[in-house]
Image 1 (cartoon, rainbow, N blue to C red):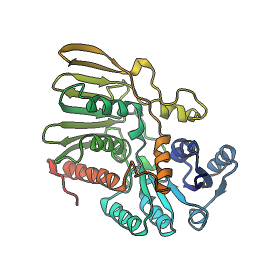
Image 2: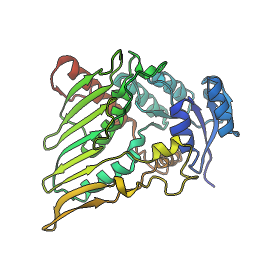
Image 3: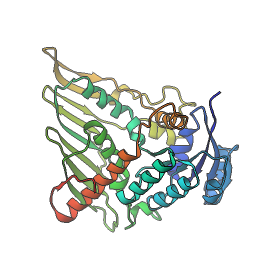
Image 4: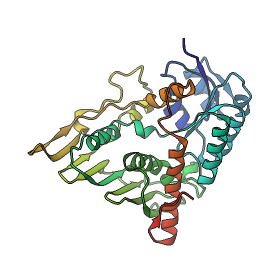
Length: 355
């Protein structure tokens, strides 16, 4: 039997209890042993949902536990670097929730230390395992639109008020939706097209009294492709999630991957049938020419599965697979955010540089 990898989860807020614990516990071979939960309600929920895990009040109780192999960090963004470094220094493999860090300087230090100690370091870019993104990849790979010339991707919410006592709403490093929703869109764009040659950004605060970014538009410049990434908190009527244009046609996709809502409702891949399968009414529409024939119709969405991220982490720890989400990819994601902020501040297009 393969090794059991024992996991310590740091943070049991919305991210830890909704997007990490229920996903990693579906992977055979990963065992959730300890959870650091600080607030009384978090402690109560953790004990109820994971009775076999030990609930502890401090991160040190996870770092100091020689039985813990993997530490998962799902805490406010400003703490990612320090907690990840402490975990690595304790000899643990590490998964950090996105965004990886606040700066590329922090990311580079973590990457160098993990490499020196030969430890696995990855970032939970869960949207790489969305059904709609998997479908976009298939459309491009199969050349269904000819040569791709433009992609517009957006990730929106509607909340026209400021959430009280929420660190993401404060004027803090790493707060706001560019580091939150934007990190997903940037990751997907870099996987599809690689690093851009330049970045242009328009970053705004649109809600009255707001302190953190709640609207952004990024243009990633490539020699033959234009990529526009958008996100906002004042989008009540759903807009297309993806618009993909090519020399032979276009593909338009509405609706979000269904896994998030299922997880929020308390389901997992083990308790809900048809996991990650989108209903037909949100399949994307294609209008293109293939083999000399004009075709308009629906493209069935690929199946999504966030568990594949943690399955890959498990196999990487065992030395059986290479990481799907590498720390260098996550570092370059942060670099795009840095350049976007520079573009906004200087009101100009900024060439891509690694530092």
